[in-house]
Length: 160
Image 1: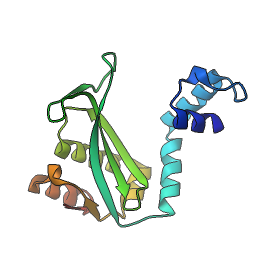
Image 2: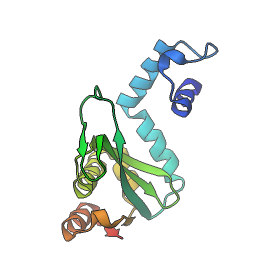
Image 3: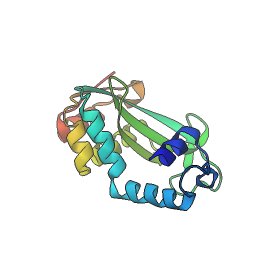
């Protein structure tokens, strides 16, 4: 766990792990297994339930990625960035509830809908976010179609 926390904090490559931690191949294998098995999501849900609130905040951020950035990479014309967009849902205390990654060209309303669909499909996240009844958003998420979509999903209300 110390090796994974070190990687998250520093952002170094796996091969750059200090020698007092286990070998990078072992740690990378554990990290991949825990990621694919949903362990990180389950740990986050468990900890976030301890500080559960009934309101949340949703926002997005476009992030540049290199030319060899892989899939889900496109151009965000509004911010003039080629890369990915991340939609982040937090509670009002700033604790992370859910993240959705997509191409930067995805609109805010479409990304919010994708995040809500993802919450519904995920058992841990669906249970964690079921108490959120109000989500604070900015003006880019305006529109009755998103409001109706959110209310039909879990009775969630969007407010600007």
